[in-house]
Image (cartoon, rainbow, N blue to C red):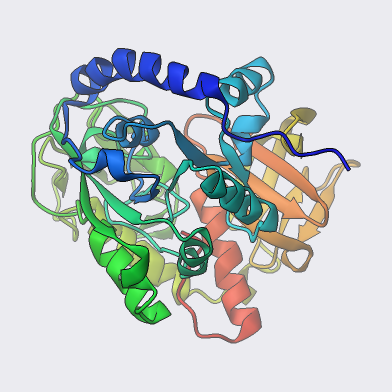
Length: 402
């Protein structure tokens, strides 16, 4: 039997030094971030757990650590052709299926740890849409115990203000990134799983759906409709944003988004001061929604492109100009045409948002990716699917996929 090649290559150390030299000043200029030095960086390797706020987080994480960092990354970055090959050559990320159990990823993490590598994971599995650290799967505890490395909790603060997940623009503001604490193996081996996960959650928890910081831009509200789809006056709705304002397309009320992250109504009292409060309302609304009312009528219809994802290889275009209908128990592609394709939620194992507003649907052994316009809201599909799943499993759960 052929011996497995080592995951860690000598070139990674050289590339890491070059990338660090280039990216550290870029990070400071573009994001206004202060990356604090880590005094014990030579004592690695580590398992780095970090909260996920911006699209650039992995670069912030790598800077304070002396050795190359091997990132656990969603499979989407492995479907980018030549760019994926370059990333694999340069940093050899560890692939994982989004929002799904992936034994292969676990085994690869153990392999990298045994070779002496530092591993970085965002245990939320998602960037925050609302400014608060989102759900952290308790399975991270079992993985940490198997890897058996010191756990470095790495906090990123200010990222939601500088670059909200739903936005395309980077605002001028201040960020901070630092190791909040290190939990050694002898410490967490004496903890229960509940104590360990609570320590992780406490060390990574950030709430930026609250006062704090000034973040300047002339496009502060733009594309908030990627995250908002429930109007406090109309219920299920759609929004359209331009510059610093967004409008509900049902009742035509407009709100503004300020440099202090505050939102307010134009000519009326809006019931929420920060988007996090609006997001909470939206979650509660969905968790009380009677999905049976939408078994016969669609909640939303979106213009989309549909592709099949050949995992870790490529994406195959299937339909370039399609329509996607969301019901309370299914999604339908090109409803009412000869090419209609209905997918019951019963047939789906996972629905996940990738990036700002792409959607991956895991259907049997296949993965399909749905993308829409810049204003496409992928979040609602995830939320409705998990609302249906909670009802079906009768678990009284309120987790809506993020």
